[in-house]
Image (cartoon, rainbow, N blue to C red):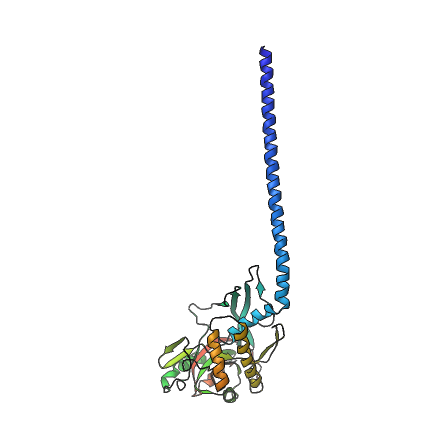
Length: 344
């Protein structure tokens, strides 16, 4: 009787062990099944994503939308920020994600002598139904450095009298330049007290061994419509449109060719391209300030182009000579580098 009880106890223990092993096997089978299901689901989602993104990417590239976004950002930057260039050498930086948000990152540089000096990058994006947004990220060399300065609108345009007090920055720059030896080149910008034709300003600058890369264009700001501005004494500064050397694009909006710098030979082509660029920008870009650009374009078509400053580069001593021009004022130094210049 006692042996029967022992045998029954062993059988119960064996059955319990078998039940535990069976339960463990079931748990592992369930885990493996769930794991394989998750992996299959992830692979399926990945394949669907690839199947979705391949045609989207192909259309984005082949339709010219990729080049169009880069062109919009390049035009926005180069027609608004004095002395700042966008790298055109490698086109089609723009990309698009699964939410159809376009984005791009482009290098920024300055022309200082014959150097192309990298100063940072612009990052931009546009959501499917949103406006273009961008940020300029400069390589800061000095704390609180002001990389971009606007031009002063000629007082005559705003119905004000000119004043000698306007030339304070001229004397400041003169002191800076006297400390720099001849073996350097620089970029500088200045405003002009009286608006003039672009060719007339080029005629005046032809006497100097310099190159001209930008000219601010008066587009009716403050007299024809309101726009953001700031004052300093008797002067008013606005972010104007900038006349730049001619840049052409192919039918997919990829950079095709450039004519640089601005001079009397290329100025007419650059002006024609300027009108075309602003018209194209307002028709194809959805960006903050588009309505202002449309008003500017209308004003320019009715009144023609008048400029009131320039961004130039050349040897230090040539930049220094510009300070003696009575019509030039509000000078700013954009950058100084060691000598790299092909003398005329």
